[in-house]
Image 1 (cartoon, rainbow, N blue to C red):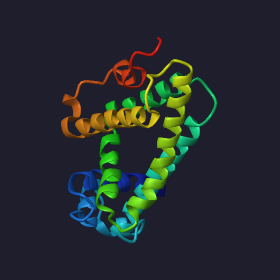
Image 2 (spheres, helix red, strand yellow):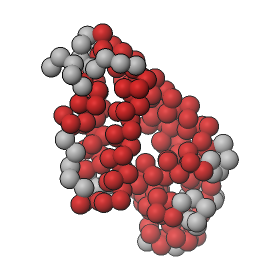
Image 3 (cartoon, helix red, strand yellow):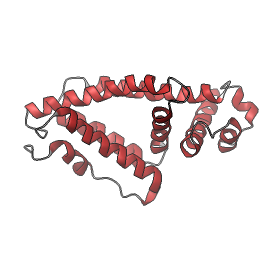
Length: 192
C-alpha cells in the first residue's frame, strides 16, 4: 500500500511539475492532484525538493539503464528500432511519458534545484554516447546514413524531443508517429 501511495504521489507530482514547473509548484497542489491530504504526502517526502530529486533520480537511472542496454552486442538497426518503438509507445499510451520528459527538461533548463542539470547531463551523455556508437556501427554495416555520427545522433534525438513536446502540447490530437518515418532520420539513403 505504501508503494502504491508513493506511486500516486509521484504521478501527481509529474503532472503538477510538468504544467507549472518546479518553482511554481507546491505540495498542496500535488496533494490535490493525487487526491490526498498534504500531510499524507509529507509522510513519504519531506519536501518538494526531495520529491523532485526522486523523480530526477528515476530519470537518471532510466537513461543509464537504456544506455547499458543499447551498448550491448546486436544488430544496430534492430537495437535502435526496439528503443524507438518503446519510446513512441510510451508517448502514445497517455500514461505520462511526455509529462515526465517535461519535468526532466525543466531540471535541465533551470538547474533547479541547483546541481540538477549537471547530474542529469551525466546520464544523458551516457545515452547519447550509446546511440552514437550504434550509429557508427550501423554506418559501417550500411544500415544508417553516412555523415558525422554526432550530427546523425543529434537529428534523431531532436526528432524524439520534438515529438515529445508535441505530445505534451497536443495530447490525443497528435497523430501516432510512424516508426519508419522516425528511423528515416537515421537511415537516410542507407541500404534497406
